[in-house]
Length: 234
Length: 242
Image (cartoon, rainbow over the protein chains, first blue to last red):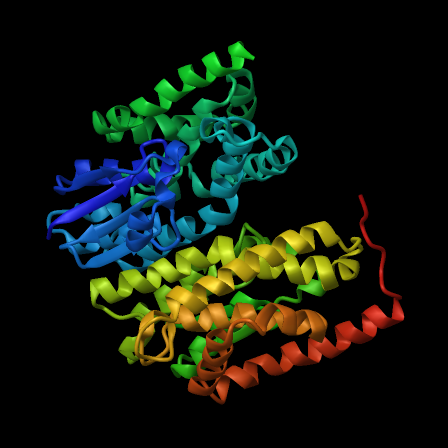
């Protein structure tokens, strides 16, 4: 199967898919869609994903798919040699991972992506900041981090649901929390300091997916520097 | 497998799970968790679902699961005799249904909940109505319905993704759209009139899953009448301004 991934490495769900493919030696062509230049709004990309968002995927020039969790489930099921722990065949274990992936949308994703976009990243595409929306999202983010700390991370196992190896849920959620690197250090510390298990889980997931995790996240750290420049220019 | 379903028939995702079980002959015990009475906040229910939301399921007194999409996927694959069209084994077809279910969270779900809460239900929770939040939610909901009209309903069959039989995505999304019955008729028409394919798809999904679809919605329609009376009695409720 010839796989094309339409991605921007600044996008959390895009990073999760890229890391997953590299970890599982799934060959693909990376087609860069630069969000800060509005490339997701082109008519050509609309043919790939009518929702005009990244990530999107194309297989053998005919099967198109969008929504990162659907893509991760598809890749785990359609490619040979993907280790079971990513998306287990056991229906009970699989259902628990589905539960985290579903919970993520209105919780960690909504809170984290909203806070970072409305307080920082909007600048990159020349959009205004919206600090009221950012404050609303921060509330959701804090509540979500608390839920990861108290519900999703257990006493045993390093990963979500007490698993001893990472699943696609760990990858998706940790790539989301990494976006907090775009915030001021003080704000980021305030959000993460109360949650020791969350911080350890982020490190464990990162360690389990090296060197690809750091390689794919490189662009995020470059953007952090660019934002600092933009802010000191004002 | 002994199945318990913790549900409130006023809740869209709860109805989807109940209808799925009935339509597929899955035996279960329904445990009512009445949201209006705060039963989801009890310590007993928190032990079932620490997120304190419905629906949730419990299998054989020991495996617990929440999030309606995860529950629907689990039921479709763990129980025998479930017709293929609900959640096909083919990885490509399955991926498309996963895509619709994932898309749903931040589009139809968020928009519909926002509209219903901020135009109608808020006073029942002691909150003022919020026209600004309602307008934002309506904008999101309309844009999302337009996407169902123009993209998700493309193809030969009457169901999402051009399928000729309903999947768990059809069931879940249509249960969500049914919640608009709680808002006043003028607003319902304004939201749904522009989308003829959507309205036909809602009817086709209902028809394909009778009598279970209507049976599970009986309590919902009773709730609609009770809410009308409760809101009329309490006056039109405060409205948030500014």
